[in-house]
Image (tube, rainbow, N blue to C red):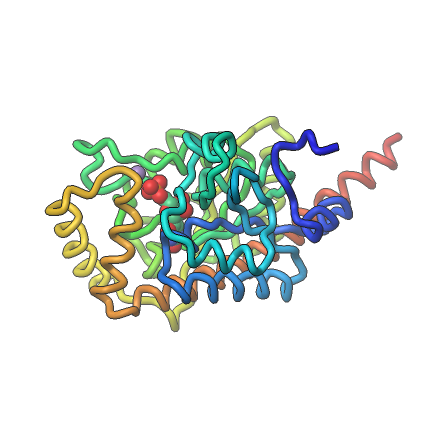
Length: 316
Ligand code: PSU
Ligand code: MN
């Protein structure tokens, strides 16, 4: 039976078998995106929110080589406290599995696992993208390629403002990834509601987002979709203030020679310090808001699937 290369939790397995809505959640935000104990508190709060909204949460990670789709509460706690956890993307997800390591999944790796398990929507904070200075560093997140090839809707608050948002949108356009502003014609910038760039597409309801992805499947388009859900107004930090912290953090990263996978976690930690915790409060608020929207999209996707099944039945 267990030829599957991943292990769903009992709850996730039951939900998927019954066609009930499921929302995937990443774990790099737990291990590399937030300090303890806020990381575990947020992970728990987000799972509870998804359940309140009528969907089953599936937090994804590799634990001792096992690709887990849905973690138990004590496993989330252990991951949140652990040091030296690998940060896994497309390149090293299978490495951790083959060598029995423990690793958290980035947006890219979480999408791969979600698609394997048959989960169509995933909530995160911000995706990785084209870093500022990518012209010389070549630092472009594998998240962008994953969005192009793996059929999962990713609900975010945009690309993190530490990135070059304009170049990130250009790459997504080149790769044919739909980029949808939720209820907004402005593309958001993670901690702020407005990046100064327009959202390439706009939809105002979860049902429309599900119908859009469904139509992409019907015409044979693979790949995912990026939804940008602006952080709630009351939690937003004005872009001008964030920009000052980012400039400082980037200068520090440069002086210390931070490169590769370490860049994003370093910048988030530095901005947390420079903002005296304010960036973290906003990060938590936007993840919660994204989880709520992802649950609504999961419900709409489940309805689409049920409708398809009954139409197929009627056609026969
Ligand atoms: N969003 C957050 N905090 C994070 C991340 C996203 O609020 O830590 C993680 C995601 O897992 C994303 C990763 O996929 O950062 C991007 O890393 P990189 O730039 O190295 O590809
Ligand atoms: Mn990178």
